[in-house]
Length: 311
Image (cartoon, rainbow, N blue to C red):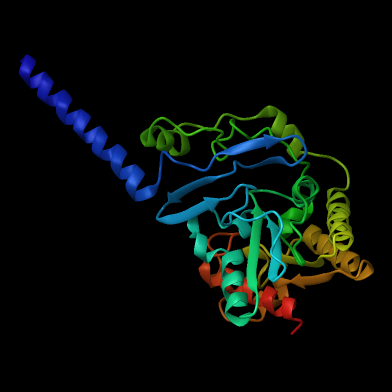
């Protein structure tokens, strides 16, 4: 009987080891990206990390960018573009490093700029809003980029104040690696997420959120001008805004405020909603209700490139 129990335990242990290795090698569990808190930015991806998730490579450089390592100051012959954004710019686990908007834009610009090196830096993190992106600029600077591109989505007009509360408390913002891939799977898909009462209070932020975020965008614009960077603002729509019935009334009002604001401040503004509405099957550009897939990333990067070239 004792021998049978030993055999059963050995089989179970072997099965657990096989599952652990499979989760790590096939899906990248056990090695998630980790975050760090920041008093002004709220949170950002911890610098200098690399992982593969669901078969997609994700690399974070020394400045918490989803980009290759860089020199703080570019070479004189380098065209440098700084892309600021949230998970749409970042690409998340569903987009390989080479297929992010920044990488696609860099590859296309490089193929047509043979006389200069091209760098498109990707400073982004999940659920960032204009205030997070402004704080990132204020902390790290513009890296002497000739162009700053701020890529937002409709929800970002209503973004709340930066906070580090999710770091280490929300399963989507871990601050350390789990000891086992199996444990990460359980934490993500089995165990219930514990509420963060302080965060729920913050997410109910009162006041004119749209106005506050427009003010942050205005400060980013001013920062770009003071640091000799061209500024481009681009906004992608939520999937449900495309076609009929379109955006909700409060979103229509916010969009109008943004449009009027960009005209008043003379900001180069790309509104992707009419562009998406003008093509066949715009739904095919989306990974989910908000994020782009590879086809969507290509579309967005091509439009931004045309804007950069003034065509």
